[in-house]
Amino acid sequence: EVQLVESGGGLVQAGGSLRLSCAASGLNHDEYVIGWFRQAPGKEREGVACIATSDGSTNYAPSVKGRFTISIDNAKSTVYLQMNSLQPQDTAVYYCAAEDATFITAAVVRNWATHDYDYRGRGTQVTVSS
Image (cartoon, rainbow, N blue to C red; front, side):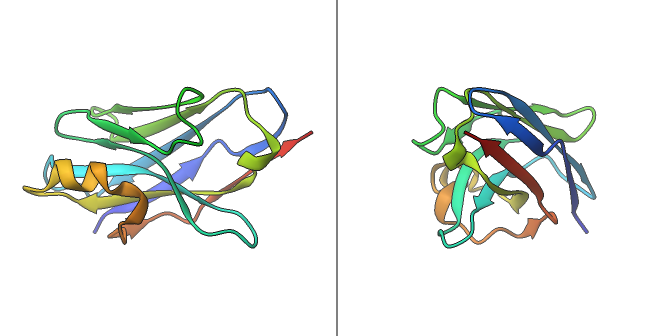
């Protein structure tokens, strides 16, 4: 079974940076989409970014495009989310999530924000102070 473990959250001042890591295990083929979503109190879940393990294609939420960068180290089965120019509205619990995307990678990447993810981690808190 796929397991996802996040790390790298914390407290940062507005304008600062953080890098989240998601260590994945149990991946038994190379057609997954792995990414991040966040949940803030009183707000709806937001799909932040994702990346396909097969071809590295990515998708970003409009709210983070240009500030966040997702990347993958396939050898380590680890996905990273580099978050720059953080703002207080980025404060949330960030969850790593994965979906088996066999034969449907492009669709999963395109619709990351609205998918029900097959697997998810326990989350890591990101707090941005003003």
